[in-house]
Length: 323
Image (cartoon, rainbow, N blue to C red; front, top):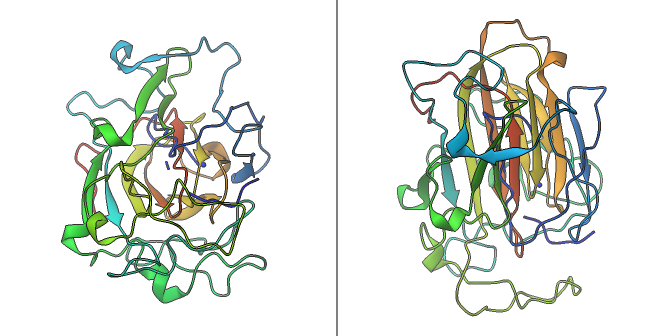
């Protein structure tokens, strides 16, 4: 999340759309795009955001219980249920007395900072820090600090699986499917998937009573219930490319989507809720071929956590893909 003033999940992910945070904003259709990667920001208190509307004839969404299994764009698996299970890595804020991390509860940003990561995934399957950082507000301390965000060597006691279809109550995820377009949305305006887990007990609790107008003010301890605002989320999946597939994201903070290991959605940095979208038809993919899709998200600062991802992609991996 950002705090500054003024998106998980961005991009197109199995009917995935989540809005992280304690604050929500009004969404409006941003319109079509002319390039594979588009993004934009909107004020935290409302304004322009992005929603996926592949067809003006859409009649809206219904709860997941009414899903037609043949909806969506892509090959439908009949022998398994694709698993959207990712990894949440817990971090402590820069103010923590135990294992502080300099990128969490640090920095502010008025909007998206594109170009923080390289355009292709690293050999280890994680985003790589782009050095130097883009001009403007600093958003990451160093390559060394960023390398920890999605490290496979992250401590076991600070790593938790998140099943988007069976999330914990604290994640507050709602799932809906558009019966006309087949687009699925995973959405949360209070996205705290690891409240009370990981290393939260080590972290100093900051947040709701901090005066955000004073940039030099250290956060103050808050009263229960505490939320865990410092974590990253990684989700890896596969899909069969079919023309017409789209992935979008609306939320905060950092969100990067890689398709075929190439950056397709770049909503990086600390920012208010922001929109990112990719039309897969513009990526030069081959129809009927299977591709990898990876989502990397970070919640880095109080006091909101919003994540919304929407897509009409039908995922093809029967089992979870965990690095």
